[in-house]
Amino acid sequence: MNTERHLLTKNPFSRPGKALQEVKAIVLHWVNNPSTSAMQNRNYFESLKNQKFTGEEVYTSAHFIIGIDGKIIQCLPTDEMAYHVGAKLYTPEAVSRLGHYPNNCTIGIELCHPKADGEFTEETLGSAISVAAILCKAFELDPEKNIWTHHQVTGKDCPKWFVNHPEQFEKFKSDVRLSMENVSSDFEKL
Ligand SMILES: [Zn+2]
Image (cartoon, rainbow, N blue to C red; front, side, top):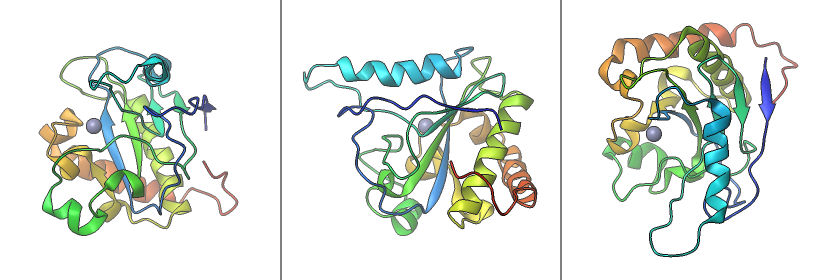
């Protein structure tokens, strides 16, 4: 798999360096910035380290970003916490299954997209399915139960395409289940 590791520098805004408590779920996002590349989005996370504490700082990051061309960039190790689902309020389902601070038990995957409607390319979906299959295998997750949209965690309109096309999100999860059968037992952990 075509994965590049470009880990963020440790900093309070995008790589706090805290350990994940455990991995209970994978959460999918859209970058909400049409036609940007995986590397541009990774560099945005990196640039957050330059912020001053003004009271209006931005805290955000994710473990993986998948490009429109299917390129996979890993920004954080999978045993560290990212800031991808923080919110004032969580859905009742998220609170009951992920607890009161889902950042500490979830892995975030950001998906790039060509246009404002948020539709994903086949290349993006193919790579996202491969990454999710490896993560499900590594952390013993069930794709149908343990892959979430950001929308399911906080109600945010993210990833917009899957919020608007729930049947395609269901297909994504069943494709991950199929892809897990092809992950060999000595797979490379991400
Ligand atoms: Zn999101």
